[in-house]
Structure formats: structure tokens, C-alpha cells
Image: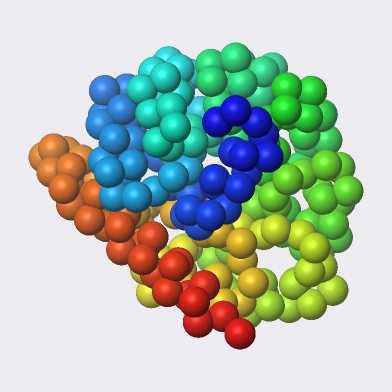
Length: 218
């Protein structure tokens, strides 16, 4: 993408952020390809995965213009800068660290810190977050997003944790700007046996669910 604004628009239009973890770097690259072929535009590679920075570098080049590659589980500015230099266009964190948000702004990258309560969500936004990851969303459910969007309509929210095909559309209808999906999206057994078609087909189902939910929103 040629600018941060274009990257952000690209991510939000797609509506699904894939959260990718794998045991081996070669698996990661193949998973990213399968997700992209299934229509997912934003793919987050978590830095808890072995060789994550090398995979980000490889995928940022290989899928340029086709998928937006980001880095997840960013906990400090050193890791943030390393991910940006490797080619990550957006950084995702489970918590709010204003210094990490500042690092993103310095390099004109998308900042997606994590928050849980309304106070934390607002604090993240006021720090300069482009989107706010509501984590963990598992116990909160879609209704929580409807409640948050009442007093905070200006903040783009993304649920992470517990998002599935059954509730992805509900989160969108409740006000989420996109959904982030990890374990429910990537079938570990399919990865082990190299059945990439299964992953692409599941990715397409999530993309379709988000598109349908957006059409149904009042």
C-alpha cells in the first residue's frame, strides 16, 4: 500500500483479520497464501511464532498489493520497530502501551492496541490508536460491542478471542468494524496434512459472513 490511509481502508473493507500462528516458518508462508487465496486481506503474524520476523519480511514482499501483513503480540517498542522494519503495515498488541502507539505513528503504520473496559478503549483511542482491539472478547460477546458503540461511536473496534463463523456476523451487526480470527479460522489438522484448500474455503466463509452482516445492518 502506498499510504497508511490506504492500508487502513484496505483492512477495514476486507473486514477480517486473520491471526496466524504456526510451528514452522515454512508453514506460516503457506498459511498466509491460503488465507489470501480465500479473500482475507489482513493477516497478522504473531511474534510468539518462531521466525516470525523473517516470515513477515517474506510475506510483505510476496503478497504486496494482495494482502496486508501485520505483526501481533507487540509488547514493547523494540519489538514494534523490528516488526515495522521487517515490513509490517500494522501492529497489534494485547494491551495498551502508549510508546508502541507512538512508534507506529512515527513510522506511519496502523496501531491496534488491546483494551477491555470502556475506559481502556477510550484511553487507547486518545493515545492515537487507529483501531482498538477488544480483548479478550470471548466472555463479552457481541452485545458488549453494541453497548460500547453507544457512547463511543467514533471508535473502530475489532473483537479478538472467541470469534467464530457462528458469531462473526453478530459482532459486525453489533458495531464491530472488523473481526479478528485465529484458531477457529486455521484448522491445525489441515495445516499438518498440507490441505490448504480447506483453509482457503474457511477464509472465504468468514469473508462472506462479514459481507452479509454488513448488508443486514440497519
